[in-house]
Length: 270
Image 1 (cartoon, rainbow, N blue to C red):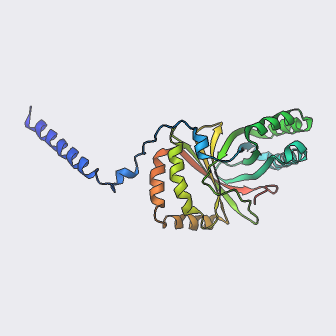
Image 2 (image 1 turned 180 degrees about the vertical axis):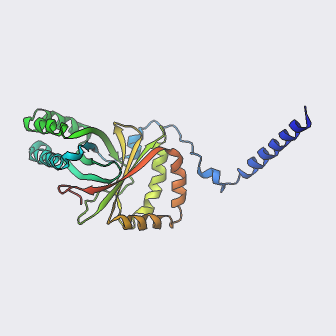
């Protein structure tokens, strides 16, 4: 073995010993980026994370740039039709309707709730599919959009109950695609993190996907304006513990993006 090769091995050995010594420190920065081990469980993740018998549907529509007015009229007419159905009026409810201001332009999001879960969704689909006025509106909408996507969601049990807003507000939806198998870890951390974000009542809703794109999380926040959003988010970093929650959840994310939303005129939450 050459002298240079021997010196190289000695150097690597010293680095390994130094690394292993410092990594035993519980406050080492590495402890904040490694995902903690999740124990196996015989209970479904959805039941552990959500205790509400309500299923939400999130419709994401990309409408044609020249058809926004006609598209929103179509959605409003569809909402009125659903409300007119006595068998659906108490169980099916539009929670929020928005158009995207910052993010994917020419896009709208509509959040519906179904009291009674998937059984009520099945019932609603059967009733509406046989309604000629509804199918006419659905076909008409197809000519006004470029694409449509639907997800069924459950609400995180640790988020505050959804409270409809009045006045003039903007909304931010932060969407995360998580690594498979990390939803419980996400919930464990955000159950603590949400306590740092309720001082200004900005937490609107938190969901995780059940059907559609899986391991998706959506957090929806409400702010008076963009400046209020900035001040609120900056104040969260001054709360002890917020930085740790962020450090633990970042490694769980495969992809994330945010959109700034404006309520439509017929949105129940403004």
